[in-house]
Image (cartoon, rainbow over all chains, first blue to last red; front, side, top):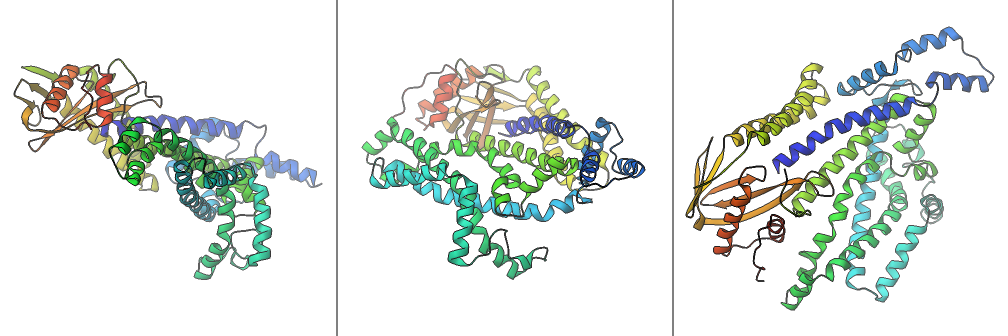
Length: 332
Length: 163
């Protein structure tokens, strides 16, 4: 296992370097830079900035250097803990994304917990009670969850939350707590608002997970070893939980790699609709305005989480199911 | 007496891996100089690669010899395990690609207070695996499904498990 961990870690290094180069290249691809975008906006508003001032800012931000120089400057900055400077906010990137990162984690983590807690019992029930009324009813609910666009559900939930519970529409806290330091009252306000985005963002994922868990578990339950276990008189709960459920979880472990990046930028459209102070809308704005260090930092954090997620899921899979799938002898 | 040992090719490849890992982790950690948050990531990784380099060195000097009565390990450490005292056996496969078309196997034997591991990169691995399987079957040791499948992939046929 130790050799396996080392090999997987080694693969991560060139992967992250390649991703950093690709991210930086893509951000640089649109013509111009942040300052030319800003100048175009000023001109559209009938204002003009002096050429000298623009050149001064270009030098100040290092935009007069070659892209390769800018890339290595950014890369070494990352290693030093310096994520760069946000042109749009005129602040270090770390300051800009700090608070939003915490709130994004909170929303995403709660959503993941919600998804697992709701999907697992329903998926197991549907598989073990196939074609029962309960299975049909839950399947219908699952299809409804899959088919309903998240932004539409967000609008409906905002309306209902306001009408039924008097919760203020949009955001993750009441207006008086925005930009205030964390306190018990602010925490309670966040918790009061949190359930709406969690249900909205989690519904489609929950529905999808129910369908997949049901299908995987049904496959396993029809295998001969389960029939044998039942015929030998193994208690039904044990005959379900010991192997079939464990084997049907493999695809979900593989999904950890896809799950982690959502902690950063997941559900951007829902965040826009619900005015959530999370990272998704900020990433979109940074990409549109070519705020390259801000956008680059978001994308790199996402890339790191994807690579780490895939690494963790590979380790978990190797531990859970160390079976060979090739024939004709071991290879090195 | 049969012998299992690691050919230089297998050991050199792991030395290269350890060196590359150290270059990309210890290198930046030293170059940055003052302690930053990056060191919390780089230094533990560098230690891991250093441990891997040490392990590769010990593995390169290790040899396993066996006959009909027992197996013994020599090199940086010495241990002996009579076949009759084998307690557990596991053959795992570690994939290097997602479709599992590439990778290596690791055979783990436990008994008489010692644990002996051998990778499929070693010369004579197939014969060692076959002898270990025979010992496990003679003692009627339980073998998990993954181990049975992996033996089958090695071309070593085991009788069906009796439930």
